[in-house]
Image (cartoon, rainbow, N blue to C red; front, side):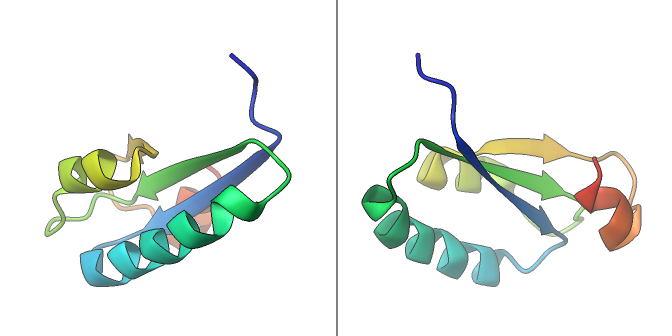
Length: 77
């Protein structure tokens, strides 16, 4: 299996609606890119989101933090 040459890392806290919109846009854009792309969603301990849905829809890798660390910590997970 070919290793990705581009990683898109998405830090997220709740806002499932916005994440679904982003994934719809990525689904239209990624196929036209000249690179193998991986999408990694980093959940910052969102209490309201069901990220199993996101994994099923987008096929992205999901990293779930046990505690909320804020944007800087989530970006560096």
